[in-house]
Image 1 (spheres, one colour):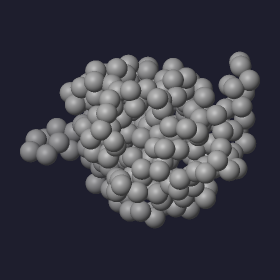
Image 2: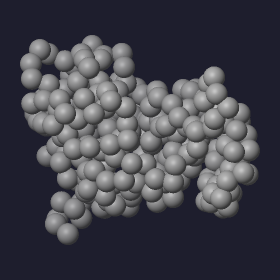
Image 3: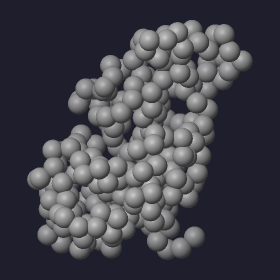
Length: 255
């Protein structure tokens, strides 16, 4: 383990309780009698064709995608993992949504978006929490402000200004005033391997109708015991999409 790895691990153990979220769609499929189940494993390369286009266009490996501290605007189920998940698989991370950059939902200057992503990507996921800690200290009052979606403030090189949060990173932050979409400043994690749902699982957030649909479906399947023993005890019932301040006491980063 390098010194930088140790620093990132120290940040994780001493300071960070920010969940890593993967959002997906499960439950009843509209217009059919089918029920889409929660998989035991999230598979890289299993996303939509648009995701494959992003990966090809930005030269990113096929990945499973997560947000740090944010459930994201997609799907109807948010699966929250402990922050240690970032140490368990090869991967990378960016301080913005790569799809938003590729499809120009995020306002950036004209230029090569592939080069822009390359200039800010954390290529070794073991370094992610160190970069995240610097980023939060530079641009937010605290991690809760980041998780609640507050816009970051430009950094002028004061306290917290570290190796990652400098130069192009701070110039990126200065552009946030032009972006209403929080994906412009939310960290995206790209796991370069398949991820078992029960690995470092913190909680599963879904609404009551989805819980009921899954429970009825699993009663008829061999996976019934897996659902009851491994998943159901982790389920937190919330309205979905999650309101801005919902569940703050129990899940301060579910927004």
